[in-house]
Image (cartoon, rainbow, N blue to C red; front, side, top):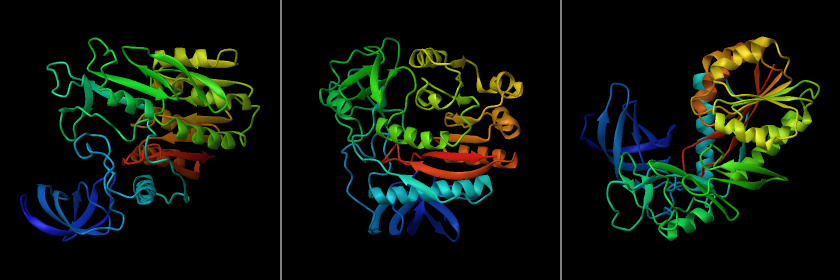
Length: 387
């Protein structure tokens, strides 16, 4: 096998990241746009010592899971990479990836994964767009999405995974939306008629379950409100089994979403977050409650929280893609509360942190996959650890 070779390849499964996986003489070959259990004609475009990458030329024998794509920009923009796979098959493949990643990097078999599906279209409330600054785009669009495997900005006139308000904005070619000055990338948030955007109206209130919460387009908030509500309800059940007389910790708290819905179960709760703008919003959202806030890096929480020997009864963790800092993971393994609920947006990071936590005396009690991002390989999960 060499770069440029054309060959038939039987695809076995979907690998982390979304490419289909086949093998030539035992060597893994990754093919973008493939489906499991199909035979394709492909060309080797990159060869390494232990793996290769191939370009899909033709589907010789299609998988039953292959479907027509629902977007004319699919394959051009850098967003979706699963639109050619039937939705239930997407769920199966992502569940398998999560399970295998925990086993391979965490070093143990996880419990059976509970799956929470989502409506596969018009689900995404929060999106990032890129401005056309240097030249006028031929379509008249003032912003677009990054291209697949390129820095090119694609002028998209629609996005079927976007919430209705964002789709309507794209249909009008975004002409009514002021762009943020001196910023090439900006965030738009839309929910039930509310449209927020960096550089325009940035802050507003949304209804989340039975409560109102203030969000800001410039501050991270979950991109799928429907699935966020399902996650909150699941977290409530977990929190109700913890000791209510001990305080709760909401680490990587963002705008205070989880504490807002779980905090009343406990007598006191503590929130920690690096982003000071997010902490200010959390203070506003939790006004009138017995909450303590720490606007510090996660590497410093071990000094201010866990090494004070504060006896927390429960903690919810929602770290960025990189997962927990090594210092925090080790401190939790040593001094963490009896119950940890870990919200993960990266299976590999969750697996690595699971290894540290289980070595420190925790057991992975349950694992759930919440499909926040249909039509993509992105995996959002909730792992519950108990001492």
